[in-house]
Image (cartoon, rainbow, N blue to C red; front, side, top):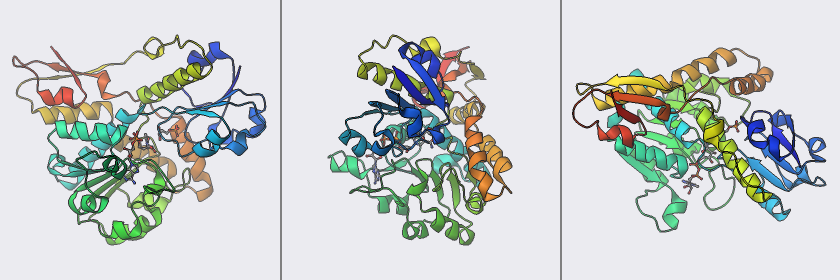
Length: 382
Ligand SMILES: NC(=O)c1ccc[n+]([C@@H]2O[C@H](COP(=O)([O-])OP(=O)(O)OC[C@H]3O[C@@H](n4cnc5c(N)ncnc54)[C@H](O)[C@@H]3O)[C@@H](O)[C@H]2O)c1
Ligand SMILES: O=C(O)[C@H](O)[C@H](O)COP(=O)(O)O
């Protein structure tokens, strides 16, 4: 068995060394010449894979250790008889923590309490669904928009235009679909952006082209009331630095970059690979993942639950650090050098664990506040 893989897949060797010979390359550089003897191709989001790339190669299995699949030509690969697997939900919790951190930061900067804002979630799947559950547990009002789910007869959704008119915060969690009845490319078009209510906070951590970046760059100089956080960019790894400058928060596509999320992605693809090649999936992430590096925060009955949660989140993840690194690395660079700097920020991303690695030590006599567990924090006495 020969496996070709993106060099940025963590625990690749730990999971796949027993399965065959592994050759790794930078994800953006994987080409047909690397695949002429490969049985399986393992990628992340930066490798574009279509039937033409694999034509004439023995590759019969493609696994992407990511949630998004817009870099894969799913229809073409299916027609060519190639099995494709992705890692649904693997880093969804990381994205939720990124959005929560954006809310805390924008609240601090504008002086508007984040818990009083109505959050409009566009796309209510793995990420949007978990975000809605977490925010609701914290007492925040949410509006949900997901026409594909509404069309399947599920209730609780509003139309996109109703959401845009009513929400104070808009956060996008849709896949990038260029065609079809629910296409999402430029879902936030120039026309819709122009209608954003005064003081709206807009967060995009889905895919860059979901928001018309050119229209946003033209709008923002006339609308200093809008607060925009962009994690994804229309021409990635190229970034429009003028747009980044106008954003309140700018990061290099790292919303889901917790180590936990990346490792779950590798494990999910290992399982799919083993199922496809009829091998037993004997390895478990719990046995291979590095120790948790648990952080502690002690709280007592006098501490307001939501204040403690905000402190706890800051201990685990602070989007301001990613924003500062992004600006320091990219500002002033000639355009030609931006893609490489963008990729370097992602390749050398600092260790980040999820909130499940933070223990809230409860010093009170009564039961700890229910919001904590509901918001995804583990809470123990003492
Ligand atoms: N920035 C990051 O680091 C990062 C990390 C993870 C995922 N993502 C992106 O976020 C996207 C969403 O992730 P997910 O795990 O929630 O995916 P998901 O497939 O579980 O959920 C997507 C939801 O969007 C809905 N949807 C589709 N078209 C829509 C439309 N036109 N309007 C509104 N809703 C629509 C779907 O019905 C679905 O419920 C991924 O496809 C990926 O592109 C980014
Ligand atoms: O779709 C996803 O899972 C995310 O966008 C993922 O974090 C992308 O990371 P990459 O594959 O570019 O390393």
